Length: 324
Ligand code: SAM
Ligand code: SF4
Image 1 (cartoon, rainbow, N blue to C red):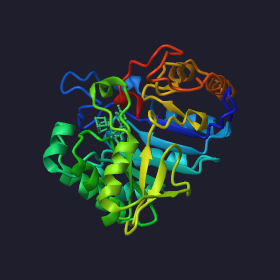
Image 2: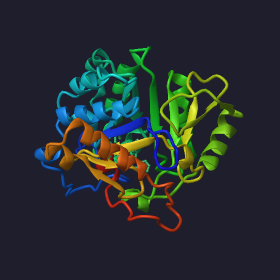
Image 3: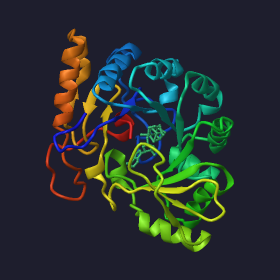
């Protein structure tokens, strides 16, 4: 399936819930989080139906995200159902890792193809500050549970929340100690992220190269999209960067997003998209659903413009509502 600018769209990020068991400072408020009522959230049958339609239109890869996807009951059932759809090649998850130790066996049995764990620091005190309620030990247990399945690739996502060089170095060191790729994600000015200091790829890389030696660009494709990776001498995993602000990659964008309440979002920055929940609950046929999805994707904006003039109404949802 192509959008109006000829980009192939074969990847969908699906938020299965807006709820979360952490309160990361750049993503959610500390208190007074408004959660959607259960009936507002797409059921697993509705998500599966949308995935079936998308697979018919050429989508091959699905990422389950949230909020925290593992707080939704029976998630492995959804993994199994989507994996069984003709045309779907990979179903992966992005999680904060807190519940991963207890859920990893079921996810693996359901056929999960890769696991991304979000962890911004290895320091217990800083982790508790950043997540407001989290314990790093639980996430490390989750990481180890994921690594007990060597056939399932594991990546770590780090939003640099402090300018302390030591934190960048300690996070990168995880790729030395474990067979995981560690990716540094530039914070985006969306929702609560607007208030935070921005650390760009070049400054982080300079710190890491002075500690670990020169990085070698790696041209292997290691995931669904926009990260680029470097090999580092003596490291078991690669170091990656997702630099949506300093190294914009919209011309290669291959993705759309589905929010927990079924809004098909075509660009992270803008509100542009369509309410698929309304379409489904109004009793559409499969053909009508496919037609709405293709029409929505055809209207995908050409790019985000975080620091420039806006080309459409800007998104007011927070990352926990969108799915990152
Ligand atoms: N709760 C899960 C987790 O944390 O992995 C999945 C949802 S979370 C919204 C997905 C990703 O978005 C996480 O890696 C998180 O760090 C990232 N994120 C949240 N707010 C962000 C922002 N303003 N800029 C960049 N990344 C952000
Ligand atoms: Fe929850 Fe993920 Fe947002 Fe942190 S980044 S508050 S874990 S949804």
